[in-house]
Image 1 (cartoon, rainbow, N blue to C red):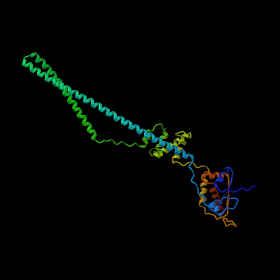
Image 2 (image 1 turned 90 degrees about the vertical axis):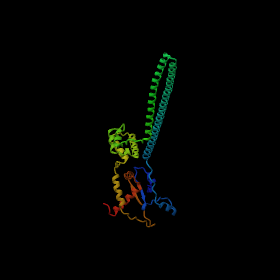
Image 3 (image 1 turned 45 degrees about the vertical axis):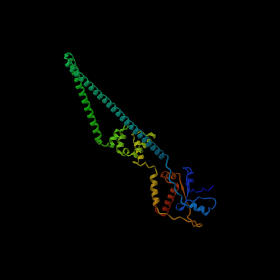
Image 4 (image 1 turned 45 degrees about the horizontal axis):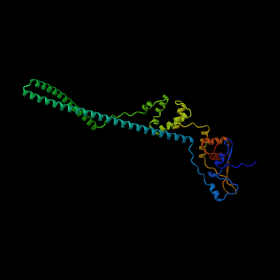
Length: 341
């Protein structure tokens, strides 16, 4: 039966199925060596004995997807705000133009009316003067009939002239009053009544299409409404819950929101707590002495075999199987020295 070579790297370990045990070769002080059929040169040994730098774990697809969703929601919100601002500006411009057209038409009609009164006054004055001349000539000619007719014309002209003068005075007074009001409006500072700031609870009560339980949850976490970043995170968590077929208003739905918002820690999986306790004891234990090879004088390699259950515990704890094996090695050393019962 061929001898199974102990594994030394994470890549080699990852190739072994999860339901199979693995034998890991641990080098002292975290140094990992790769076995080769022939003796390695000093340069190769130096390169192999260098500490392996751990790469930062890549973000999982779920976080990347959530970040993309939040970014798309932020862009959509910014676009909606820009469109609303543009619509408001267009409405204000249209209102100003309509007001200007109204004022122009109003003043043009007012000017036309005033000019018509002036023309009528001029005509009435001319008619009155003509009647007076007729009366003078009829008096010299001793023509009572002509004098009577001219007197009636003079009376009608003076009556119409009095009415026109009253209309002119009324129109001039109205124009003076409107000019004074416009001047006062321009000179008077814009004094706006300070609006009472709206509380988060009032804002939440005005939000449509919310269940009573959702309103209560928002009122207990008002920062998700007042803080823009947290509001975007909440929208992303809500969208994710809906995608996972969670019914809004249920306890499962609110638990998902609170875990995504950081208000509640996710539940620990089975075996994780025991592994944390074991890891804390392993880290605090003093380093044990390593046996040395009589031929080379270097510390010998320790072989640790992990069962499929131990490999699963390492995966759930978020540590590599090499680190888990090294922790078991330290624990065995402590037990061998009588430091752990």
